[in-house]
Amino acid sequence: MEPLRVLELYSGIGGMHHALRESCVPAHVVAAIDVNTVANEVYKHNFPHTHLLAKTIEGISLEEFDKLSFNMILMSPPCQPFTRLQKLPKYILLENVKGFEVSSTRELLIQTIEACGFQHQEFLLSPSSLGIPNSRLRYFLIAKLQSEPLPFQAPGQILLEFPKIATIQPQSYAVVAENILRVKRPEPSTCFDTSSTQCSGKDTILFKLETAEEIDRKHQQDNDLSVQMLKDFLEDEDTNQYFLPPKLLLRYALLLDIVKPTSRRSMCFTKGYGSYIEGTGSVLQTAEDVQIENVFKSLNELPPEEKIAKLSTLKLRYFTPREIANLQGFPPEFGFPEKITVKQRYRLLGNSLNVHVVAKLITILCE
Image (cartoon, rainbow, N blue to C red; front, side, top):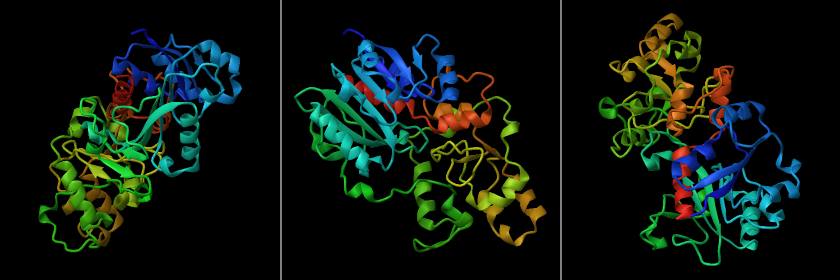
């Protein structure tokens, strides 16, 4: 097989490029395009020999696109430069956030690729389906320029798991109709040992403002042996700078999503991680022998000093940028230039994608 010529759009810190390498599909990235100057510095640091264009898609002429002579596009978020090309690419892979599947932009995208003659399949996938203890539910589309349907194609439906190429019965896969996808799927937050908790009814409020139903779901996640423990992704380096300060503990204790190294889940890390608390990602309890129920029980009845003292026994810290990169599938050799700050690293990783998930999709698309 002759190596594919790949165009990487909205290349960010190179997640698609790393996924392409992991897939082992013979390929060469002919150009990467992004306007984010900080992301481009990180990309160039990791792929110094790749042609990197600091431009918008609109700033690239049709002649420039055609000169690149690519036959695969990897992109996030979506755009449709292939509609202007003299020669269409053979493969397309697109990634976007959950919710894109019910947008008008997605409807336009599907109309466009179908009009261009592509066979396609859509997915809603999270790294946990590959045994990675992190929730990052994302929309994906893969498309191939051919007249015959893909062997696993489920027209009008979105797959919730990876297809098995050897079994070409689409009805055997977990699929969901598009109208069902409009229902918001709950994201995991905090996990407790529920063995000592007495509760009844789905609206019962327990420790840390959580319902019994939420706690039960997280307990099940932590007992899913098909998923790795978080400790497999943690650094051995000094992490003292990442401990949460007392003022933050006091103000946001009830909003923290707390996990342990032995947990098999973590929340999606967003670009606001390290700057904001609610919904931006989990924090790590490094004092594993401390029972979280004992810390939060009657916490609101204590004066501030005692609250801080009690919360401090958990030894809570942020995940480091390297640990988040590990959870997102970036290889050990991936790194940041020294001048990129911790805040910038969190922001860039929060805007990135899971390398393992994309690598799997590239493999499926090219088989």
